[in-house]
Image (cartoon, rainbow, N blue to C red; front, side, top):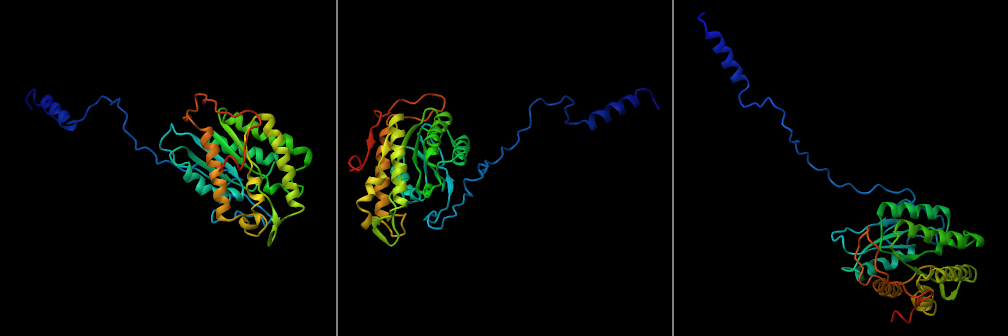
Length: 285
């Protein structure tokens, strides 16, 4: 073998074996397809809540749940509706009335003032908040001694404190508990359960006045029209009644959200009413 042939062969083989390869590692990371967005993890006690009393069930095609709006405009205010089967009745129309003004989530549940309810509220706000306004209508399920008289005030105040802690700039509106009539005789108010509802409303009214939270008087809106608007099962109402509640809520929510844009990092402009101001059936007309 002549001198120079072997080096040339080796050099040629080296070049051919590495043809097109760059021995220096490329510092540019290989793009990885982004993961598809996943649905939020369910919260135990929210979408699987249970009410053992057969007379106070969801009263609609949808059960107890946290229903969240699809958000596309992050500047639009966010509203959380909290309520029971009565909310199931007026939610759809209320969401329609607020379309283009706010994104509306709804937590439809069978709870009443309790530590369990307050703990679940904190989890809901952590998972879905913060909100710019919380509209709260609860108590229908709290009759029959479920809420001890001495516990109503501190538990209700704690509920409000959790909202303010988790959504510190949120406006709050309380809607009073609706009347309970005698089953199959809606012209009459249930002498036991409705008396309990009135007492809860009385206590809630004092707390809301003390904290400067406006109240929608759902009870007054329906009580004098119960014969024509109640369905007759004792607790629930016809479509015209729910439409009345939806329009009332839309008016008061719209008032509170005037000029508000959602920004969780920035305090919202104050649109609070005077302490003790109420919105009742006169203001909804």
